[in-house]
Image 1 (tube, rainbow, N blue to C red):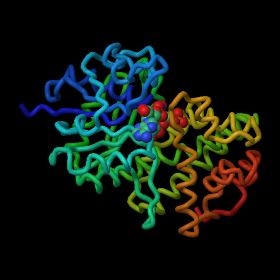
Image 2 (image 1 turned 135 degrees about the vertical axis):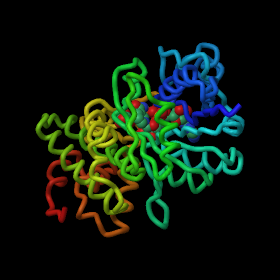
Image 3 (image 1 turned 30 degrees about the horizontal axis):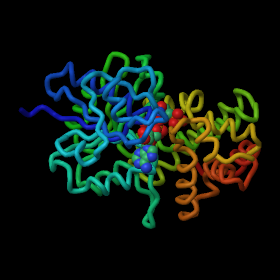
Length: 352
Ligand code: NAD
Ligand code: 13P
């Protein structure tokens, strides 16, 4: 038959919820195979059992999404090559730092007609300049790649609370519609826009602003200050995206992937939470240490994204145009104290 086969590459907090969402739809819709294969980065639990075995026995990701049934048609697979071999719809959802290694491992081992979508928030910085994760996937695997970003704190979607998301696509409207169908539920409303770079940069850059918002919370500076930081951050998100990709549309910032994701992440995300703890400790405990202690294996994206953005800014001579982005990196790398977030972020005149 020509039913589409879906594999999800990644099984962290959002990866597990994405698998659950998708699995509810593949059961319901006749154009997809029921089974959803989910690649698991294998680990041994404190009980001595393998995470994959426990997921397949209990139908729950007991480490990254405890208490939520994924759907019986989700099959966990620790073998990456085996998991991708037969799929023609590949959903990438791992922390961004692992994506290059994953792409290299599966290059040449996937179906030639496969389509990809990235739920990964982040970028790679190469000698030639910044490389978005969807571009990395397209280049390494030679396939089309859309993105799905939005105001999507995974634990809330896991319990089916209403939210929205944005699919960004380059040219292939039909592929984008297939992705919308795969994800859409009454509690997860998906809209497609033809602006892959804009959507992906929104999802990536808001994690840097969330670190700034966490600093403000840790310093107990109040709601007005936090709103100011979010506004300055949104302005830098737009300016940075348009400098890198002049095709980025203003309207994208008003989609779920833009202002809505910025708000939810600055209110309730992991980046905010760990940055708050960093500021409360006066910067004396590193982000790496706090991440391990507070997130039980889940990964922060904002600190490394701030560093990656900083590299791009310094390489292009743009540091002064982006005081908030630069200051987040200077604080998180220990060069400035957390209290610098307000003084520095609004300090310099900008040309936008
Ligand atoms: P996570 O942070 O919850 O979990 C970390 C994952 O990384 C685990 O599955 C772990 O097994 C895996 N891992 C650890 N070491 C690895 C290695 N060496 N190679 C490959 N994998 C390894 O993951 P997540 O929340 O699913 O995040 C994935 C992406 O989704 C990120 O870019 C994140 O920003 C984005 N996202 C997350 C949320 C959310 O609420 N959690 C929402 C939207 C988008
Ligand atoms: P955090 O990683 O900061 O929790 O952000 C989650 C997210 O991307 C919500 O859309």
